[in-house]
Length: 123
Image (cartoon, rainbow, N blue to C red):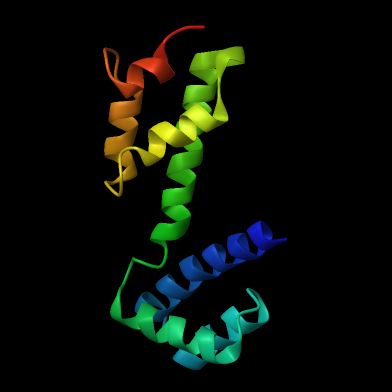
């Protein structure tokens, strides 16, 4: 349930981010959306929306980043087949720290020695 709630929150962030910055959505409308759809408490929803007004495109980055990680995971799963190990994937992903997922993707899919080699070797 928590994962589904977070999924709703990420989806709301995309709609609100675009709405606030290009479609004339009001802070009140955005706050109501977070409270009613993502089920945030009203004061927390308002605080989030006020933050979104100061950081265009950042709120939608949660959904974009999650999808990029899921795409990378699926590419590695296909490459490894039955030898895919979810823990090893997560360990490799997190070992890169907070750099952009595009750079992590390059490193994790690169052939050669290093942590990526473990993920990329054939079973």
